[in-house]
Image 1 (cartoon, one colour):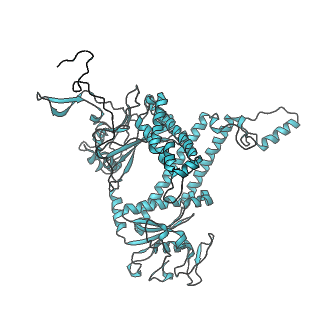
Image 2 (spheres, helix red, strand yellow; image 1 turned 180 degrees about the vertical axis):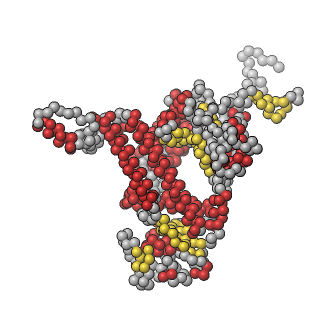
Image 3 (cartoon, helix red, strand yellow; image 1 turned 90 degrees about the vertical axis):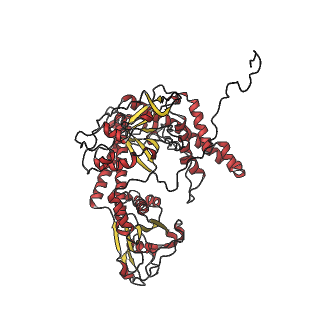
Length: 623
């Protein structure tokens, strides 16, 4: 059959119409309710100047998108609040019209990327979409909708560049093989061992499992200071299929065929001319950490998502150290000693109470039957030691010195934005009265130059900052992060000791720690009660128990005695003295013991905790 010019072409002979990507018709993957999540931090090597520049530019581009989205969210929320009539008529329709939804924020992000053409050289639509999702969850949703306690966050605002430390990546597809659209981890743990094997390692150790079985203190890897950047595989690989002529089928090699040392790969922006961004991974060298590496990295099928993170490090080139936070679909690693300790704690069959305050943490536990014949009462008081208080005071002095150095540097670099201090003004007046020449004040010590309303004449972000100022600022942020990590470590160790001695079933008063900080401020830095209680609750769950919270409005443990008598006390009264039964004991331990006797009607609702009752035990023998 032939067709002439100008005649319509039959549909069967016409070119196939272009297909557009529509809604996914397959079953959407979802994580099971019993599937746990854990995160491992993988340090990245960015010593190469070109690689470091691309990484810094990637953070700068994504930050510009996030800042624009935060400003859009702020304006949209203001418009939503101003439209009271529309909000009362149909709040949902008004929010959708303003784009105050997840999809609306994503559309805004796409428009920013389309309008700013240079962004396509650095970021992808997937990264932009996840930045929009993060802004919606952390700014818009928390402001528009209250949480479980009825609280709402304030008006969205734009963050600071120095606080921007995380680029959220896109999770891999668990239904389509080799589909991971943003940051991808390529290589194997065995390939990393082969590439950087220690020269002193026994030749019989050839697999990661054998390296994990070695005693602690043996060097497994010898990684140079500057890791080599893995190259993308080239050539062709067999697919395992054959053609009609019975010859093996082949395809071009990709990063999925890389089995060497581990590396995080980012394909770059949609219009990037620089190719893939490859960041080598540095692993711990000692054998003591290899059981944990095997737990997280030896099964690539459990890898789920990677976020690119940076943290302040004054010793690193550029002042930032970069890490890949790999989320794995498995539980966290627990050493054999930790598993044995948790098993022993789960078999204690005890119940306990916790009383937290500004200066200490008191724990009192009983046998779960509360019968004196089944066990003794155990009490523990957690308070900072003299060495810890001295270390905290030293850290405060260093912190205060760094902040003073920052203030002096800012004043010296911007003398026109500060008034002279009273002492400097008096000295100038004395010199003028004595007829001496005017002396220029290089570092004014007075207040910031402001108008009558107290608003500075020049915004702080417009000040000139010296290199020394930036270095000291980085040191201050690095020291703060180090102190926070040390406090987390201390809280975990204390939580382990508490569950090991008192069991995994504990009750604590449901207090708002933020109120304590507003009243006592820095005094809580020594004990960190909120951090300790959170760590205890997490350890109880891992041990197989649970830490319940009892409302202070219904129980009033600090104002109650074992005999049921109400004993009013102020915060200054630290000794419990009951006029009815004559009990004299430490106030915190009495509250903790009463906490152990609280039984909640609904474990998830602290307000269902009734008044504590003490059965079958004489109050004088409790403590």
